[in-house]
Length: 453
Ligand SMILES: [Fe+2]
Image 1: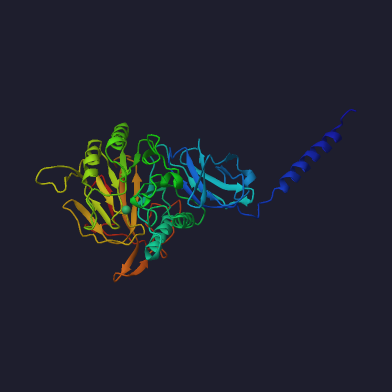
Image 2 (image 1 turned 30 degrees about the vertical axis):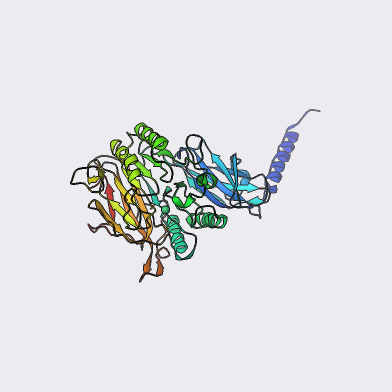
């Protein structure tokens, strides 16, 4: 039979109708996926990878569907998919890790998690830039699982969502106890998911650091965040990553295992390999010399690391553990009579040490300042860094604000400061939101700048 133009028309109409029929068969799932406790982790190159983790409490065949276009919960429209490659059955959770790779730098990615029961809400994230660009980040540590300390931690979490940093550097101590209580981990992860996610579904990745309240199992952060470890030993949780080309290198150390030996060797190599980066940043849990008198000095740790920090020009160091706030002048190791605790101020070549972890845990007194302490305080909160690459006549610099999330009235009644804080957007995330409570510095300013002026 010879096909006429009419036949061709009929055939094309049928194909179009069939396609329309197939498309109309797709309906957004009314059911949610049977997973929760979503979190994003930076544990590799943050400009091309992202680890998505969740607890799969029911259902089967979970998969992350994602892409650069926002299709809401219409899961079939996303062009990429990734199944979880690691499952950890620990602490009453079936933690699934899906690592997305080959992502474009400085890009928004939208995703849903689909399983046999349904489709999750739509979330999204930003990858890090792979060349020097401005961004903000938050650094802090120390949360607790009960009482007012839990509430203070939630206030800090909610401020993460309001400030929308590129990432959070969390210097250890996630839960009360020794990090083996299933209920406490589940609560921490639920809070993190629900409170740090922005109102438009953006999730903020975390760089986790091991603290002493994780010591009940030295591999804890690999179970919870798939945190990288060294020497094929999951107890050796420390690693490093870079972002913004050669703008920033971040080293997550571990103060709860041998700081010398393998770790010192690894640290020296890592610092050597990244010595030309504009900003080199270290994070670890215990400060060398705490700014609260009830905490023990860490002389051994100072002996292992302080010399390397100076030799390779570490810019900033973020510790935690003491539950208060401190920022030092830039300092370097020194043993002359003008030094104190083995450090002397050196604005040109020193490292600024910031801490000491009061994300949620009840603030301790700042009663152990040193001659090289720039500022200290006793309240809940975190550090908020604004990073600017150099351009024209302005050199690269980091502006650091100390944000107060909670405080105690007459010593026992907690006051939370997050609810009245204005919510920032992606277009104004370098602004200071209205009603944000900032710890004033001795010079009356809201922020300190590195390199120090
Ligand atoms: Fe601690």
